[in-house]
Length: 469
Image (cartoon, rainbow, N blue to C red):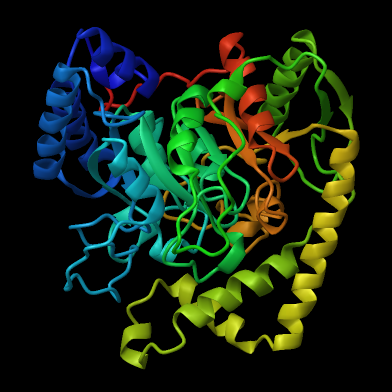
C-alpha cells in the first residue's frame, strides 16, 4: 500500500485500526519528498531526524490507544514563512541569518505539535512571500508537478507541490493576496484562506491584515480537520478570533441543497478568462445546481481594487526592508526591490485612502452576501505558465496582481475563500474554481467544497511527472 496516496483522514483511520503505523507513513513520505525534490524543488529543508522521532512517539501512543490529538502521526509540511521550533525560518531570503536558537513555533505549528503531527520539513516560498509565483534568490525555482517547465504558483508553491506529489497530505500555507489559492489551483489541490483571524499569526506579517494562514490539502475533509486543529486562539495574536462555535469537520455535512450560489464568470466582464478555464468552471457550477443549490449568474458590485491593494502591499514590503543597508538591499529579489521603492513613496494619506477603498469593498461584499450564501468564480483566469516568471510571457501586466484578479480582493475583505480542482486544460494543467462566503462562514465554503468532492464532481487531477511515478 502506498501510504503517500492517503489523505489525513484515511491515515488516522488506518492508525486507529492498526493497519499501519505513523513510522511507516513517515518513512514512505520522507522517501517521496526526497524523490520529488530534484524535479520540483518543493523543500527548503527536510527535518528527517525530528520527523522520525515524532513518528516513533506517535506509534507508541497509538499502540497504547492514547493518541495525542486529532492529527497524531500525520505527516505535515510547513511553509518557510512560519516558525518551526528547532529549525531556521529563512523566508526565502539571503537577508535572514540562520544563527539563533529558533526556539519558538508559530501558533498554527504549535497547535499541530500539541495534536501529535509529524513535521517533515519547510517548504519553499518567494522572498518574504511577496509574489504569486515561487522563486527566490535563496531557494531557486519551484516547479509544477504536472509540468516542471511551468510554475507551481505562489507564494505557497512548495506546499502545493508537496501535497500534490504525496509528500505529506497536509501543509500550512499563508495567503496575502492569493498565496494559498493560486498554487493550489495551479497544482490541482484544495486550498483554503480562512476568515482573517481564524488561524492566528505570529510574528505579525509585514503585510498586516491582508495575510492569512490556512490549510493546503488533498480535499475539503482534510482541510476541515486541519482547521479544527489550527483554528484556535493564541495569546500572541491580539487579532485572533475566539474559538469557532463548532467543529468544521461536523459542518461538512448537509450538502448544498438550498444554498444560494452566485456565479460570476468574469467579475462583470472585468476579467478575460481562458476558454478552457471558463468551460471547466461553468461545468462545475452546473453540477452545484444538479446537487440542489439555487444558482444564479450574478456579479459582486465592485471595480478592480488593484491600486488600493498595491498601496497596502507595497507599503508593507517597504516597511519590512526599511532598515536594510544598501548592501543588504542588493541581496533582495529585484522585483521585491522595485515594490519596496514604490511602497516607500506612498504617504500616510495614500495608505488611508486605500483603507477607505478596502472598507467600502467590505461593505459591498457584506451586502452581497445578504442575498447569496456563496460566490463562485474561477480561481485564476489562466493555468500555470512558464516557471521563473512573475507574469506570463507577453502579458500586458508588470506585476503578479495582473493575472490574479479573482484572489486578492478577498484578502482586502478578509472573507473565507477556497479553491477546488475542476479539471484540466488542453495541456493537462489543472483548473481551479473559487468558493467565497461571508466573513466567519468558513463552514459554508468547506461544506460546498466537500459536497463537490463527495459527489465526484471535483478531484485532484493525476500527476504523471517522473517525480510522481
